[in-house]
Length: 306
Image 1 (cartoon, rainbow, N blue to C red):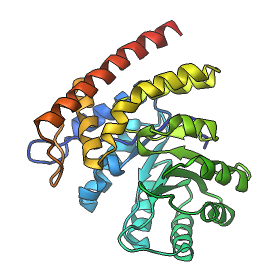
Image 2: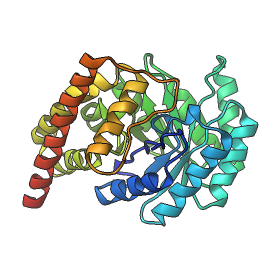
Image 3: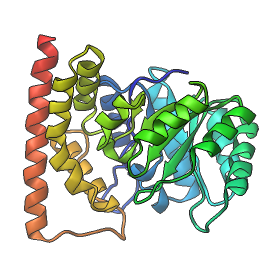
């Protein structure tokens, strides 16, 4: 599988009683694909997976595969606190025809490199579909490049690295170089380091679904040699991203507000516990949402001309 473009992680819409709004989720999946996603993913951090029951995570995976209906590849995020649970969920994802897995390392207790290699090797060997390692260290440098390379050597289906770390560029290059190009690197954290990723060989970005068309236009410009134009468009996203990425729950809230403005969600409700920004912060959120809605309109006009 080759990925080149935006692979959004679905936000999860909730009803007033905090049950999952399945109709809105299906609408979001269609919206992401229609606006330029090259693959889709759930249930990840953007999907509030850490607030879901096992049954709900399995249900979200099922809806994702069903609604995508083979139009683009589907990655199911299956990372759990144990190898046993992760393997169980991963095999379920494979059984419902997911195209790949995204697996975050266990976070509840610190593990060494040998233990993590053993964990990921067990996951890879339990399925035949491609596996992506989600290196989610939002304030540090994450796992060493040699871990990725060792896994690639041991497991033929270990094919992707998702970096959500500080200053990922040199690590991205190192992973690609040491794996002989076998490993494809994608960037997370809302695509805030997108230009860094493109410059260092990353082939994909994994933001949320609300602004897929804007990311797709950045990819188009960059891929056609319009590097400065791509950078200019990305820079216009930065105020939104910088504000949102101060806290995961804030990022989820502002993403859902954009999806509401675009007619995909009917509510921006998050499951409790969550942040509840005061009125002044709400005003900042509204202003940033207005800015990116305007950017969407401009992007659509640019795409038509192109």
